[in-house]
Image (cartoon, rainbow, N blue to C red; front, side, top):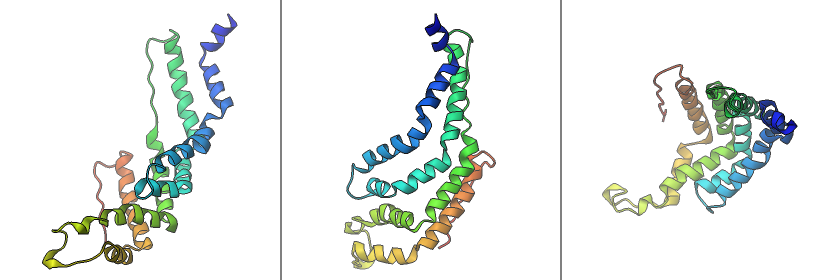
Length: 193
């Protein structure tokens, strides 16, 4: 009888999650392992850059979805589900308040985008990766112009400085956050080149 009365209460599951330290484990162990697995799928490119940016990604994730917030959302869901599962309620509803984390996520992205190491990785994984091989196509450049990937990447690097990318990213995030959080119906991002 003791087993039934314990296993059938939401407090039991909430306590188990707290005692296990699941929410810190998600940030400290599970997410780093996942990033390592994903990043290990390539030697170059976006996934490899993700691996090199791991400390910054982890910091942004912790700021965006801190363990305390994950715990609060999980416990609220458990407290809704268990009574339903054990027949104490006819229905249940789980609402996850992700909107409350939009501003913090925007700030975390802006902070990461202001980091020169992250900016170098973004440039390498996104911009440089797009250029590689593009110039091999016959229609890539008009009038028979010939440029190497390295020449184009070097030119773009001069134009797209870390300061420029950080500033434009911050402006884009500031435009996007009100839209994602539902405060506006539209958003507009303009690159100031």
